[in-house]
Length: 505
Image 1: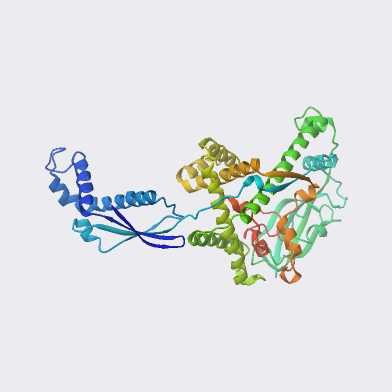
Image 2: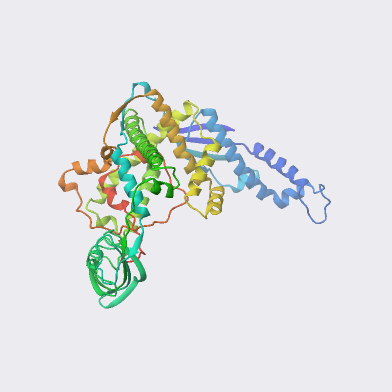
């Protein structure tokens, strides 16, 4: 094998690799010899088929396999010998005609074009000074959680026939929705249970049922939001013929020891302790997420090197495709947004560059410090994901068995978290006490509020609240989870299913 570096421009490399015909012939003969004891041909005893006959019968086919295997082996060896790390799978191009090579009359010559991983000089992590926001669990936080828990446990009791519905009551209704006198798909329901004031249905619907009594028939007039999930209904005026079949009032739930025992706890005190622990875990998780973002920001700022253009292009295409997919869910296009496409592409290009830079830095940290993800860790992540799909565990496991890329997407966030933990141990971290509101505040939303008014989009009308987008078996989670996103991405983040019960919001 002869390897010649024919081009080296920045991170781009081009190697020309030559494997002489004699080497190919040796490989071919070895394969045919192996076939001799395996092939069963009519007229020949097992193991007695002449090599010349095998060559005439299978020579071209086997030589094709030999060439493919040779390219794979020699290209890998060339990279190892020259200590080159390709950013993506190299592009292989055969030189000249392939028929003479298959016939054994010519050497195998091919070009390998690729970009290499740049040299990365890691910063001194011990010099990183990071702030981690932390919040204490207040008694009011526990009280609030208890109130929410009690609200979930409340039971409704029928009111008298002549009692009027009040906000907070439960109305049992039948309804038929019509637009221009025509009933529309999904606009009809029987025995629907609607808690008035809950915001389950589109704006204006629930308010018109306050004061209704059992047996009442009402025409509820509403206008679907402009950004409603169904394009056929968005912005349209509709009339719902509603029959009130019953009114129920919420029963009072007393938060005491009896309430706690109904939930399987020994006492109210034990219930409060359990809730406090859950809130603390939630706060710690958010603190860690905020620290991770700050750390990734610091790693992004303290590392500068040339990025492989092919990796950036691939990352950008994935981001842009997801962006357009999100818009499609809203039945919109890029032209419907306030920000020009050119600016949007520039914003997402920066995100792609950030992702690639951070991905390479984290990979370098992991490689140098032998940080690995074990099969046991991947299995735990798979079990955790399976819990999200009760009744579909078998299908989920089969999906991952057949899709190595999906397994890699499970492995990636585990690796990232382990690298973040490693850097955290070396960096100086200062805990900064903050309020619960500040701890959970979205920094992207805050940044958007600080932008000039001209950059802000007009407030969107309230969109359907009851959404249940289908969950995908695997969701990619890498350094992008803590990145800064441009404001323009916000509108596309809302995924509104096209087919929902139109009256629901």
